[in-house]
Image 1 (cartoon, rainbow, N blue to C red):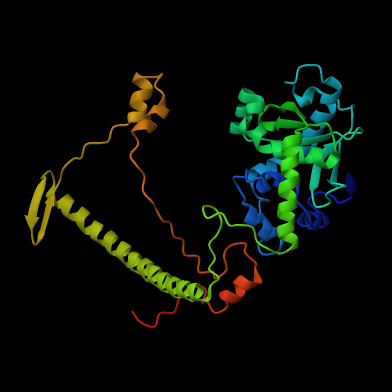
Image 2 (cartoon, rainbow, N blue to C red):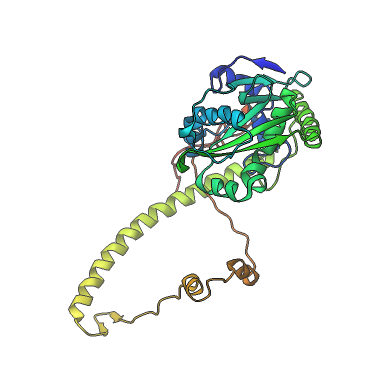
Length: 358
């Protein structure tokens, strides 16, 4: 293991991260991540895309805020390893093994990195997590079978790979539950580590050769590159934006008219008094009541408390394909910085479209 002396989250650390595959990216190259694809990670490593800014994410903020106290929990736990795990950190005096947060890379595969929340004097790494309430409840109930544990398992295995350790620790700390925590000993998984190495070599070859991996048609962005497709898309996108703009303007006018019409209707209803029907001067009004819908969820909960709601899925009708469109009026795809894409949209009009007609 080669130690890299960069403070975590510093500018130097961000540059170093871009020069390799971090442990938190192990699930990405293994195609296990729900948040990022292999192509997207490649685009970020090659400067074609920016990482999403997650600095304001409440989960990230919670983790950073509680990292030191969680580390202290782990330090003290090592002295109490054979005792009850469910303790409150506030009761501890932190005078045990010190865990040092360090950045490191593999001696054999220098592009395989790990930012360690802590490593002890014998080279055993520790990963610290501060889960949300729902994830914490899952961890308490299911431990190693919880989604949180399984999600971070590849990350910890890459840390074991980099440090060449026989095992690692994974600690979940819950500030919302009086500082309660759970710590798990994660044994070295040589089969998964081999997969990480193989996928890391494959991925880093794509980075070094500046050759994109295959796109995931269900998750990655479609960005046209054929000249005919580019021109056709730009033309259709401009017309769509123009129509969308004009429809919104008409809807604003329609909304104003609907409000004015509603004022007139309320005046006529007041004039009717207790009458339910009226027909005069070109306006016919009929008052009636509509039966409310039944709250089936509440009915089942009150009358059949043991009913398994999942069984309702057996009666769900087939779904249909839907399309959601958002007009951004910005030519570049969000967080994409690829110069070739910039060139393709160089002449695209941004902001409000200036119509030549209508």
